Length: 200
Image (cartoon, rainbow, N blue to C red; front, side, top):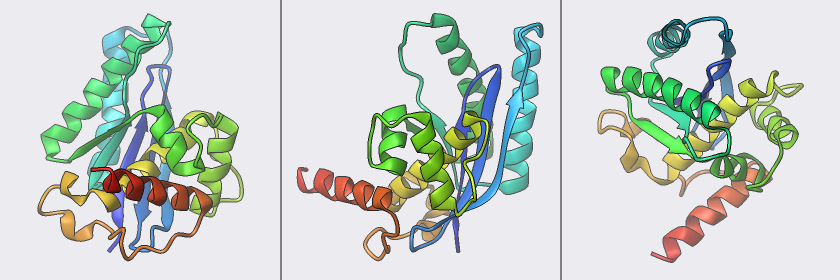
């Protein structure tokens, strides 16, 4: 049975939402992807309400095993950081309300997972997301591809650390030991995970 992950690329103006199913051979299939937009002329509470409703809808329709979201990190633009933190809080609240485990990943972790290179640019990420999901072109805008990349990263991480998932869901987590590696990014990710375990 596939392991389903909802990935969110948080943002007030554009919030990417992507759902993927990952099977035991680590192959990933697109379930749904969208970008929810709000405008700067809306009040903050109205923007959060709109984004929250969209996230609620996807959670209720697709019932993911894990919600994955990009980890908030410090950067020069404080306004952007605040917006990302606010919508992240909304998403985390909705996941907790439904008892859905949450995975947080930094941008470099996500890039390394899907491209094998932690400093990849958005074009490279989009290209690899399309290849992994068997799409003819990269999802657009970039927020959509980023949300799918976050979901893929979390799904592959779950296959190596199944204890993150809730007990009722662990039977659906793919096994890394029996997984077939089908892309260079998957090979790089699996090698990194093995190296990390050997150092413990």
